[in-house]
Length: 363
Image (cartoon, rainbow, N blue to C red; front, side, top):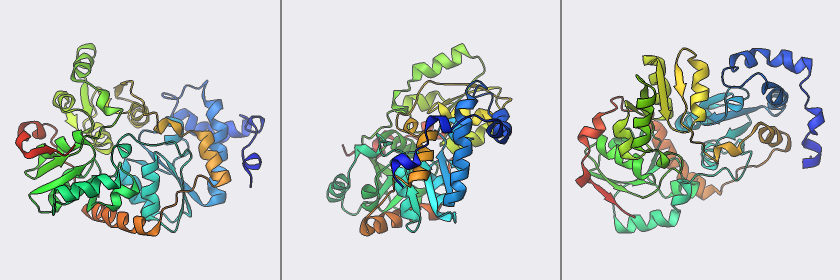
């Protein structure tokens, strides 16, 4: 089908009584984060995407940073990058639509080469993934011969293929310690690497890659949250600068932050990470007041309901990888999945154990 044939005219996606009835339950569930006046804009796409998923035998996998109409409206599975990788490898769907950024779609394709993996917008990139290349990794191996390379999943397939093992923010410490070596190269997120170095006795060689969302947070902002909202709990992602983590009550991956809110049920909380996550979690915990930091990922926000619908209709954009790169990257990812999710639960231990002399910046 051509794009003209598969993209519906705006007039055909109407908020009809039938669509209203079919989506009423969902509308009620998300009304705290999607105002009722906005729901008629989203509901026709939610209904149409559901129909096209059935036609294509497809699933939509959505990262925690997606907007609520995607996260709650059309996703079959939501989670952090580790959870998405695990679910993608296990689903029996023929088509995976990755509502996230490009490296996540590549990861799904690497682990499910027989499936069709679609990314709704090819421009949905990642500043961390753009900070390093396969050639950079090869040069690091020459500089540090015999030192294993641990690579954050926020990287291209080319970089994963040059690595010994991958990790996510959820299992980075466990992955590093699983190698049983005194020294590792940790790529590319400098701040996550510093967090890992504070959790382990393993020497960590770092790269100066940063997330363009998390690197903007400051310790002063955290103190302002506390001053303006007495009794607030501060939860921070380990991609934030060390001084931000030092001000937080809890440090962990997106999945760990969600678990922490569920277990502790704070009266008031701020999640120092991409702000759509607060909207998504607030639906699950209506008794908790979420203070939203205004930090949007421009790459995640390229994914929209109309683009997801078009991806299913036109079966684009397909993620394709050459067999040699995919095979080598798959080995690094499978080693990560074998370690699983063993995330540190003590949020301040890393501050007390940090050993600056056991960190080295490679770039």
